Length: 341
Image (tube, rainbow, N blue to C red; front, side):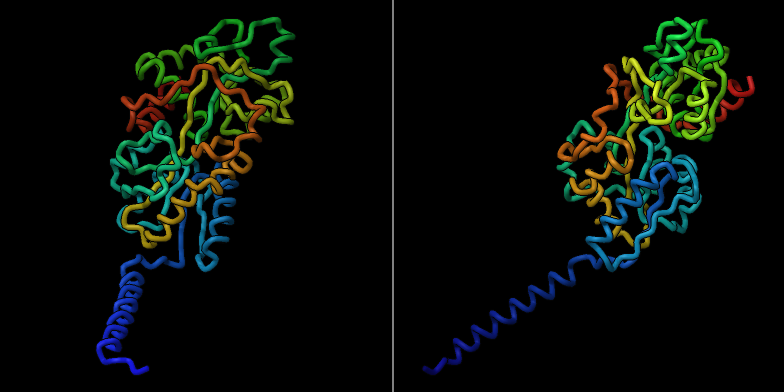
């Protein structure tokens, strides 16, 4: 059967249309880069390493590097600000809710709406500018050594105001907020509840009961293990830690510590950075949050079974956004008025 020239022309046109469509789709889709640099604090190195490992399974040709420089969350955020004119990082993760405004105001982040943002419930999204995407959360609570409390015959602490009770003199600690994320969370907790002026008055009054200000998590665990201190703020997942078997909590009140992830403005590798942010929101990645980060995922489909032992505070104190943007001022004031007196 002979094919007429009209039929041949129709076939040629159809083939041309298909090829053109394929070329258009290829050219219009952003090309994924082969490099990704992620900033974050040292405290989330375990979780970040797990994220990177699983992300590379999806994108084996991408060279992914997590960098903390041994810094805490505020230090690494400030480094990003210093590099504003020529950013090294493509993504920053582990951004505390109470420091997000500082980064946003500094103009170092790019608003971005991940394609799978619907995986995250609206109540978990705390940055209404659409710049810092929720990543995980935890709870800072007042913990105590039950053995020491029982031996002394004193009541266990339940709330912030209990910490200034005279019978607790020399038993209380909280981490140095200038070096510890937990300590800074405690400071923000106090200021969120009491306001800045009343909050600093409380901290100065509390100082009469303070035995020490550990530099971080490890030194806090050592002090608790050795019985040097008995009462102070820790994350709820620290309760039941094998090296401090008597550490417990009434978990009446606690501070909600929330972390986010964000796209760096003028990042050198923005397309693969966006893919990484979307991956972090996925159920696969969020399933790593509890076992690798000892935090709670923000994707409700992710598992938290591993953290079933940890007490959830009955009253959850959220960060007071009305005092956002002043962390550096608070730290300087704490050094001046509280630490040195």
